[in-house]
Length: 144
Image (cartoon, rainbow, N blue to C red; front, top):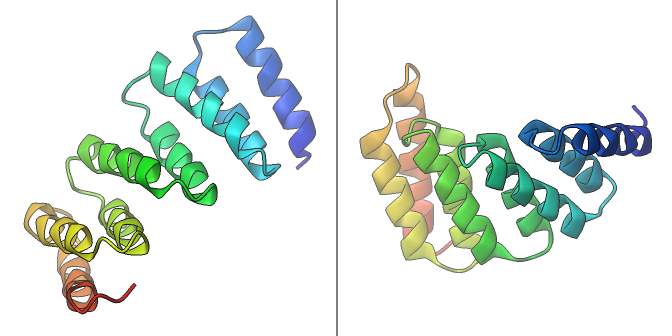
């Protein structure tokens, strides 16, 4: 679709409904797609201010922080995503650990994976736990 038109449409949406968190999140996605990461972060932050449990806004902002190379900020948002899902989304756990490893914080990555192995309560949890075991070995060796 036309990203510029979508950004304009969501700008109008938030103008008409300034308390609509999804409007800011969606406009942020448009800015992100345009490579305007600072503007995207601003919109994701507005969405979070309006709705502090807005999981997608945290995930989107984390991606934008990562894109800007601000990994410590990304870690905070991925940690919040893991918290909001009560540790039950293995992808968020894996991504958080990967960002720690990208920072060179392998002990942080190991801690996240170990904690994830204990808290995961999903149907296909055994497959993820096996994947986590492999990641644990990798991060314990200090490899990204």
